[in-house]
Image 1: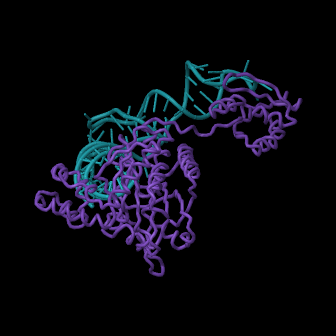
Image 2: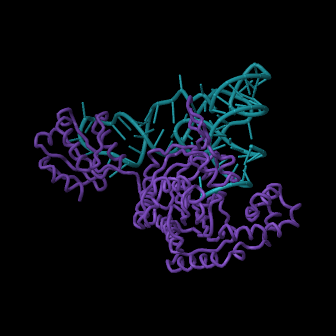
Image 3: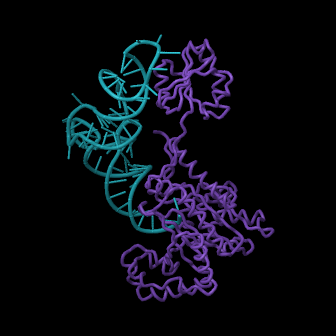
Amino acid sequence: MEYQIPRGTYDILPAQSYKWQKVISAFRELAAAFGYQEISTPVFEQASLFERSSGDSSDVVKKEMYRFTDRKGREFALRPEGTAPVVRSYVENRLDIGSANAKLYYIGPMFRYDRPQAGRYRQFYQYGIEFIGSNNPYYDAEVIAILWFYLTGLGLQKLRLELNSVGCPKCSVDYDKALREYFKPHLPQLCPDCQIRFDQKPRRLLDCKVPSCKKIASGAPSQLDYLDAECREHFAAVQEQLSLMEIPFVINPRIVRGLDYYTNTAFEVIYEGLGAQNSLAGGGRYNALLEQIGGKSIPALGFAGGFERLLLALDEEKVSLGRPPVPDIYVITMGKAAQQLLLPYINRLRQAGIYAEYDPDKTSFKAQLKAADNSQARFALIVGEDELASRSVVLKNLQNGQQQTTPLEPLSELIAILKG
RNA sequence: GUGGGUGUAGUUCAAUGGCAGAGCACCGGAUUGUGGUUCCGGGCGUUGUGGGUUCAACUCCCAUCACCCACCCCA
């Protein structure tokens, strides 16, 4: 084979595309019901947008970003995530003018140079929500509700919503200090990765998977004990709102968000049974991000989820996403005259929204009927010499074999039968 | 980026150094006006790719590409 798809990418083939259409339209409909509107941004942005927002020590920025220089030497990057571009657009297009909250959603491809694995690709599709404009804990719950109702609404059962608060920048300074104090005596026993984490991002020490580190981390102080009064109150209020909305959650003080811009509420939806990549979606509040990238200080939050993993989970749980479309009718003609007579009618049926399949390459009656059967069409529409003479068609129900003869004109009668 | 595994027909899999096969799917036929069942017929596929060893390679060796699994990272 001369050409091959790039590593870590995939084609969505026709046999799969109806599933994608289904999960995408379900997301659009739910978001719309909550009053969220779609925003689309370019797949590439100035590289520094991501460096400044995600944090230049994050792996996403350090080693997973597709960077390139354009012909004039500008530094760009294929977007590795969706929040920073949306916030950039919000600030740039002055959506902050007036007092209205921005309720936004997006759907599109993201790019990260990772080693491909089940549920992990270099180009992957995310759906996401961004809410900008209020620090009211109601909105934390609302955003989480959209995610929760989306996933449960599709039919997933084995979901777990995990909730945490990572505090504001002020309390996380205290917490980082406490963590360092706790880990310092154990430093020599920690794995090499954790040694680096100790300096750069002590919080990451909490979710190391090396058993010895895990053991040490199990006694570490909890973030929740280091929240200041305001953050503690906000976290409690979010929980209350979620309970009022009847959304089940568990508190997991070990949730660490990978990107630097998160503050306060952090959450993740875990699906057991996907192997290592078991996080279906994650998000949180990012009250400091807008100011960080040059806007006014406006509180905001959001989440993002990956469609690939979602589809894997739906598959694993054997949730049906409907079927690929099947024809309403399969047209069978015998002889050239019948074919010529029928051609305009076929298209008139199609214009009326009826899915009519027709294959001029199949000539024998038997082959056509067999193809009609294989297509799973509801009806075969048959026109031969007899029907030609009487300007009628035979409509054969392919499930029960019953046939009826119907005149071609007026076509509305035929359409009524097919739609009914 | 690190470690391990796997690549054979559309697909699922056989063939342990000696002629590349089977099930399913697909196509055709069994009276050119009735499908599904049945019967008959239909397979040269660069054995992922490129080298090497050998009289002989799907099989052994090296490289490379891709996928899978775990680490890592994250959605």
